[in-house]
Image 1 (cartoon, rainbow over the protein chains, first blue to last red):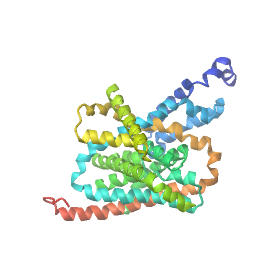
Image 2: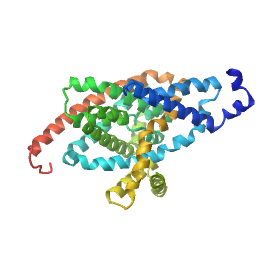
Image 3: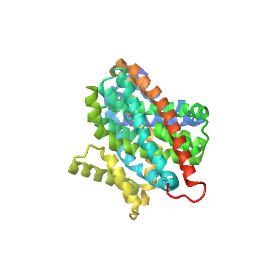
Image 4: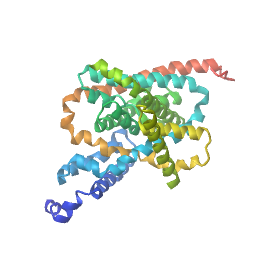
Amino acid sequence: MAELMHTPLFGELLHTPLFGLLLTLASYRFAQWAYAKSNSLALFHPFIVAAIPVIIVLPLVGVPYEEYRDQTALISFLLGPATVALAWPLYRQLHTVRSVWRPLLITVVIGAALASGLAVGLAWWLGAPETVVGSLAPKSITTPIAIEVARVTNGDVSLAAGAVAITGIVGALAAGPVFRLLRVKDDRIRGFALGLVAHAIGTARAFEFSEKAGAFGGLALGLTGLLTALALPWIWPWVSSLMG
Amino acid sequence: MIDGLLILLLFQFLGEVLIHLTGLPLPAPVVGMILLLFALMLGAPGMDKVSEAAGALIRHITLLIFPLGVGIVLQWHRYQDNALALAVSVVFGTLIALVLVTLLLKVLLRRSSHGSGGGDSHHG
């Protein structure tokens, strides 16, 4: 196997986008399959499972992470259009919640500030530098927006992507116990809280409660992402100066 | 599908142009998203063609993001000094936020359903 890797043909192919794209797509396909097999267990989220083959294969064949990231630039580029695309579900769900828009809007404003503020405050209190704190600030919002915001808050793109994913998984895992403990049976609350704190992964969990919870999750995801993206770039210079 | 992609790229481009013209410190795709949302709400013709491409991109958002996410493991040496801050912030920050947001919704939605009295709502 190792000898095959070092034949001229393979040696060359390893350093083309073909290798990175093939590895990425195959890993993702495998992760989708594993997630379905596990009955959509949050711990088996495709983000975690898809990362495993990549993390094993890259060091094995000697392709540095930076090179892999360049090879898969085509895929990462699509995060831009994917962010624009969020307007569609947001538009569709605006109609379903007309009657309660006011309490929901208040919750988004307070909740988005809480989710981001707690992440920033805790990390700063434990002595993390600005790159780390800036990567955590957008951790509760959907990844494509979070990545864009992290660039503005002097964060690290990889760290932001990881923090967002783990936030989603923690939120999805904690949802059941938290809602039981707080005696919440209202699917509007379950969905909206999950979408606000745990973005798309939380929304997927909300759909397991009901269709209605899922719709509220999707709305919360869109509004929280939008609000955080609009507010953080203005607030950040001030937060940054506070951290000294 | 192609129509949808065309619309998405066009609005991202418009977002980019708007940011260059105004100097707003916002991510261009977010501005594109807001512009598209306005276009949809105003009922601009042909905009519903965005649904197929938008659905596909959103459904496979994990595919688009995990190549960046693996960097957290493969470049762990860059982050390991802050492991504790990261873990506490992500795990406890998320748990506390989930509890507080849930409690807030409980209070606000209970009040709002009192306000509407179960029958005709008076926009409150």
